[in-house]
Amino acid sequence: MRIGQTNGQIAIAGAGIAGLSSAIALKLAGYSVAVFERERELREVGAGIQMGPHATRILERWDLDLLGSAVEPEVLELRNAQSGTLLNTLPLKPGARVRYGSPYLTLLRADLQKALLARAKELDVPIEYGAPVTGVEVAEGGAAIDVGGEHFCAAALVGADGINSAVRGLGNFHPRRYSAQAVAWRALLPLDAVPVSMRNSIVLWMSPGAHLVHYPVSGGTRINAVLAIEDIYRMDREEQGNVPAYLSRRLEGWSGTPLAAIASAPEWLKWPMFVIEKWQGGEGRVQFIGDAWHAMRPYLASGGVMAIEDGAALAVSLTESRGDIVDGFKLFRRSRGPRVWQVARASAKMGWVYHCQAPFNTIRDLAIRFSSGSRLLERRDWLYGVGRDTAVRKS
Image 1 (cartoon, helix red, strand yellow):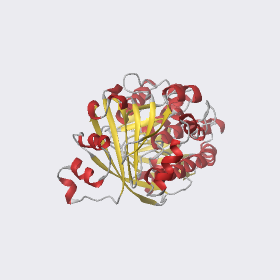
Image 2 (cartoon, helix red, strand yellow; image 1 turned 60 degrees about the vertical axis):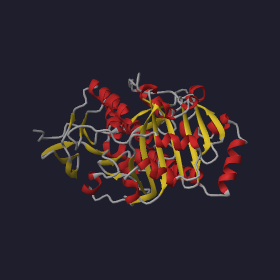
Image 3 (cartoon, rainbow, N blue to C red; image 1 turned 90 degrees about the vertical axis):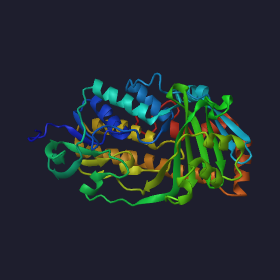
Image 4 (tube, one colour; image 1 turned 30 degrees about the vertical axis):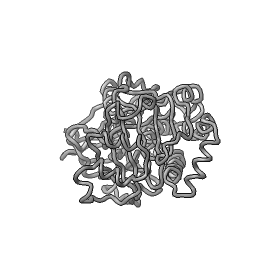
């Protein structure tokens, strides 16, 4: 049904955050795209997502509608999970808009994906479900792709199909993929699971070897919680019964408020964390974005954001290369690589800060307490960008 000469269309494997972001950005830049999703329908992956100004300024530029689903938290609270002590507060609602020109938002991943999908449909982006990419052969002038049991001739292929990317194997791309030696437990909590004073805040509870973060989603009607524990992913017999009780035992010594929040969850879902080691991310007419290229630890809340940045940066690179796909992909790798690996390194470092053992946790707490909240926010200037795109350069 799609056999023939390439018409310059760019094929995108994956209709998640990375794939839809690249489709929207490329379409707005004047490129013809087609998205192929291996699943027969989009399913929610993960629970919540934090989006700093480095993401929201891009989404605003794309005219993405997040009304009713996103929340703009007032502050980020940094707390010691064992004592419950409030160490410091970063101003988000006033601070992000004033300093970075765009808001800091929290919402469900499913709501973000729905908004991206709606915008892609407005732009008449074709999306085919139940269509896994099973083969690719690159030749001069295009790429012959086997998708959904048929053939598609495209100008290029973008692998946006996640940490377990099938496209990587097709092109014999085998970057080192390894466990982050940590497990993420995710849950949606009722609003009354946390004190009233915390319901419009991002609250980060830190302790040796683990941390809990919770924030409002669904327009402020629910709380998303993520508990990260340094561990090897496995199914303990002990945890198969009462998961909240199991987690409480794992977190012995924590204060009452975070433990009460953990106990309030009707269900906790366990997710392994995997990381991809630094590599170029493609060659020729094949390029990878999002977790398929640079899966990283989530401790800077920027994994999903990097996928959004990728989409915007890819469109910019192709435009600056005047539509030459090969040169555009080269420019994208050269200009984008330093940014994503800088974020990956910083995310790993932040995990150490959150989870550091005694006596370093005491030193950490003192350093946080004796700094101002605004100063702590300023330390993210390199990440969020002071009123400008740090990685996308221009639109």
